[in-house]
Length: 260
Image (cartoon, rainbow, N blue to C red; front, side):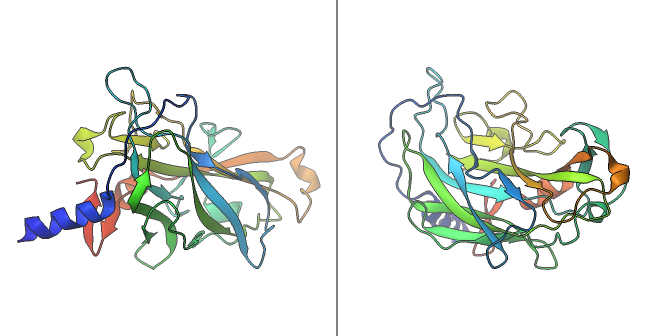
């Protein structure tokens, strides 16, 4: 009986996969439609944005992106055990906390209700209920050869005015799922992982999107840089391996669907 219920839920996520479409550029990645925003430039507390799914998965015959996408899962760094660097994404490690650079990080994501591409949506939260991401899947799915916009909103970010941060870039982890597998089944034909390589099960070494995550850059626009900061520094915030292993997953009615 449990097996039948599980299969039913998997089918609810998968929907009916349509006919495969035409080839798309292998250089197109899943990204945010608006990757750079100003500090606290929110309309009533929210910056409206979209995840842009640029192509499906690659078939094993010629590597063309002809496999349809069943759903997507998106996770922002939680700011608690995140990897913080300055200069570049893999630059100088910062030994302090995110509050050294950002005053109000906690529940960064709000789902925009939308069923134009996928029929199901759900938050990904931590143990305190903070909304760190979301997944969307099922319905008619995204046919290969088409692109999709998956809408969401982020809370307005305030950069710590006494810090030397001229920008803070949040590294966003996204997986576009084409087949429900366990981690041993991850391949270019089953999932497109746009994640940072931090030692998680989602690194995807050797796969199409290896170490090529989406980003959201917040630029300083309220308080001027302190005079002692010179030109200031760019700050980067990546999720830890522990967070990704915990949060980058899909649960439907309390049952984990992906990864198996």
